[in-house]
Every structure is written in C-alpha cells, then in structure tokens.
Length: 338
Image 1 (cartoon, rainbow, N blue to C red):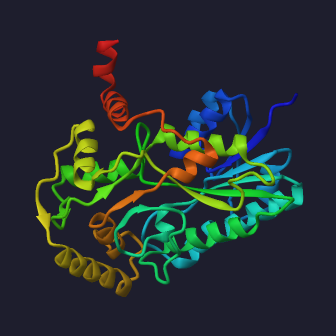
Image 2: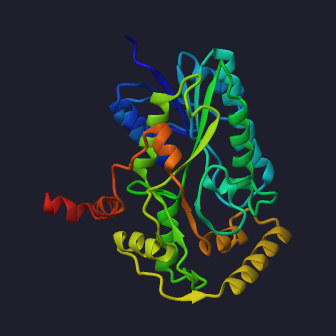
C-alpha cells in the first residue's frame, strides 16, 4: 500500500518543520511549499517547492499528486496593511481549498488560532462554541477568522476539512515568540500588564505538531472532526507572567518584575498606533491594543473535543518542554552533560 502523501504549506516555519518531521516518522510521503528553500528541510530530505501561497498556479504545482494538504502558511504579526494580511491569509487559503477541489485532494487540515474568537475578555475554560467577535483589534486574527470560516464551509462529501487552533506555540526552534520576549527582557522594555494572575495555556511545539498529524491520520469524509475547529494547548493553565518568566529563565534572560496598570498600557498602545498610522509606519509599534488585551486576560480552553475526536493527549509536559528548551538554548552545556 502506497504511503499517503502530504503537502505542508509553510513547511519551513517553526510549526511546519515540526509537522513534517512527525509526518515522516509516521511514514507519510511529504512535500513542503514555502516562499524560500530551507536548509533544515534539505537535510531531512524533504521535497521542497517554492512559491507564493497567493499564487494559485504555484500552489497547484506543489499540491499535484498529494492526498492531503496541511495548510500552515500564514502572514503573522500584528501590524501592517490589511491587504497584505488578506492576500496571504484569506486569498491564500482560498487557493488551497480550490487546489483540493481541482486536484481531487479529499483531505485538508488548516492551522488556525484561538485569537479568531478573542473578544478582548477573559477566555476561561471556553470550548469551541465560543462565537467569533464582531470586532478585532488586529488584522491577523480577523483574517485568520475569515480563513477558518472559509475552510469549515468547504467541508463536503468530496472534501473533508478541519481546523486546529494551537495556542502560543513554544519550544526549541521558536523564531517568533521567544526571541521577542528575550529581546525585550534584555533591553528592560518588558513589563507586566496589570496585576491579575490571569491564567494561560500555551502549547509545546511537539504537541502542536502531533495534533496536526493525528488530524491527518483520522480525517475522512464523515469523520467526527470534519467541518469543526479544535483548541490545542497543554492542558496545564499557568499564570501568564509565571510562564513568561519560565521561558526567559530557559533562555538565560532576566525575569519580568516591573508592571504597568492596564489603563496606562492601553493609553500608550493607542498613542503608538496613532503615530504609526499618521506616519504610515508599517513596522510593528512597541505596544498595541491587541497585545495589551492578550497579556492582561486569561486564555485557557476546554480540550475535551480534541481529546475525543483527535485522540489528542500532549506527550511532552510543560516541565519536560522547558528542560528541552533550556538544553537547546545552551548547546555547550548539553554537550558537556552528554
């Protein structure tokens, strides 16, 4: 029996590469589609095709001969032109759906985000019945929500679709969340926002990747997860600033000890955003309203649906994940202990 062949869009990214590694471990044939070639994937022997997710022809070329698409590629960040976010996150996702239909690819797993249902308030133990908000503070969650709805609406007897919402992915190889935290902590620019011990539930990279592979293995027309979205996290809620300081400690960076009131942080964010708009500055402001509300509210989820329908059970605990992260951040120390 021939192995199932999977196309991973955004395969050169933090999550994309982890998914490709896990797919290979499970015996899948794999192919990556991203803007540029990645040396790490070349070392693994992954077939790579370069192109723009918003270019339908490039995507069709990459998807031809595949049995499933795991669509991870996205434009991240919290500032910039709406058109750029829509082009990649919405138009690009529509291209993925259309490629599945044109090439008779019958399975699609989409990487979404819990931010698609974030309304600026606490999310404490919420499940997938949480509604999409009427307003978003940033283009990223707005366009990811549009893309998620597009994927779920595409579910049919010819195309089985599902969406995963991993929350704050962290671990060795992170090139987004941790470097930002470390940079700001070392420059003494990082502050606690508010004084509440708001709980969050992030997810270790291997667990996020495994959830995608579990979905790829189980998805088929009529399966329980088709046409549905799922929160993916550790299942270990922890006060946000405790988690931040644990990550910083693993990276040998100073902890965050100082704080600012939420009202002041919001006022500063509005000021930074206003200046950036007036000057047409596309770089991300030092602080945004979205970040203030994210960092001052609770974000932890009911994972029952993922456990039931995907068989999701995080194999790497937070404690073990932090040890792995610290070892990766201190290669000389880990090599001496080997």
